[in-house]
Length: 276
Image 1: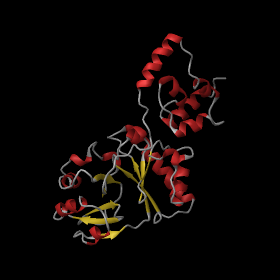
Image 2: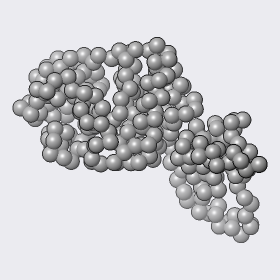
Image 3: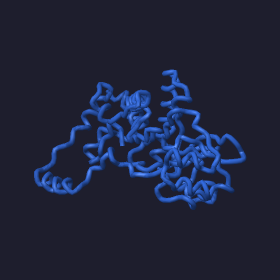
Image 4: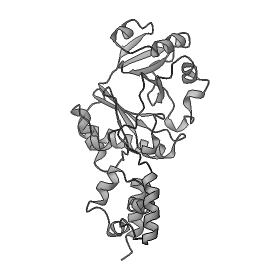
């Protein structure tokens, strides 16, 4: 019967943004979440039948094998470029209002970008500032929040560009405080930069917060918030866990990846299936 097909198709698109069963035929790489779903009883018969790659004439097989041998399959693990400090500028604006390139503006993040070295990663985060007289900037690996004004933004930029360490923090001229949480999960929700992150990010944030609440994990232990482009949106949904600096990709709001990542966070471990 075709009665349930439209609803099933809709559910699959809503969950993955595409038909995973067509990945092999179209030469796409399946995510860990998609592979797990296709191998599970949850996967409908019509999807399983599509997952079989149709046979091709021998002549085409030979030609395609030569093409495939030249292709480089992108790897999830090792896809993160090295960086120094990561500065997260707290903003009262939601991710839906952020411009595509936040660092190029004339506002606070644009001014700060003029005073830092290339090793510093700058991002916006969905956290309300604690005061109207300064801008809160969360910095890792410092695990500190710095209170920056337009008057000391130049000094702060120079500080960010120096090697991180306890001595550097102690000598920092910018007022700062320890973070009010132990661990931070940053989920890319930057829709104007990449629609995939804009679609997946808010769903992941909502589901993570729901599961943490069900586990009775307070925000003082694990806080989850949206962040602007962090790199690697081809691996959407993407997120970073601090202070461990663990990056993850191909995370979805449904399935086991979120539960597994949260379990790894609580155990100070890594969920290798989605680890970058």
